[in-house]
Length: 149
Image (cartoon, rainbow, N blue to C red; front, side, top):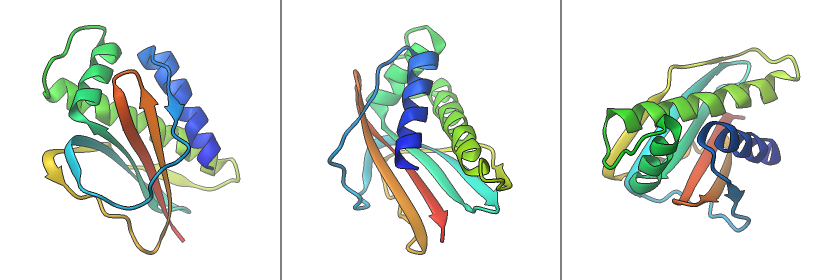
């Protein structure tokens, strides 16, 4: 599953954002506070229940939004929130397709974003958790999938 998420993220970033992406092999799985960051979150319901989130530092989210929209964005605003939500939505759709290959019925929630100076995004202790850190030109970010066991 980890490799499929990495492939999916690389394809989305390459085709939609014109950015190269690489997964960081040595990643932490410890939950830690997010500082000056934004998270795009999608809920999964059905045969599999869980949450997919993409956590981006503000500066990375702004650079990604600039590429996504094809115009300069220089501050956190509703365009950045919308772009991060749409990015989470695309990743969620790909995760749904990966999980549904085995005939599983999964529905996705509308994307939501959380942004702030300092906040926690805690993993569900009863969930299988895949946490992948990535690097692109503007910086590093993470994608996390939690599925109920």
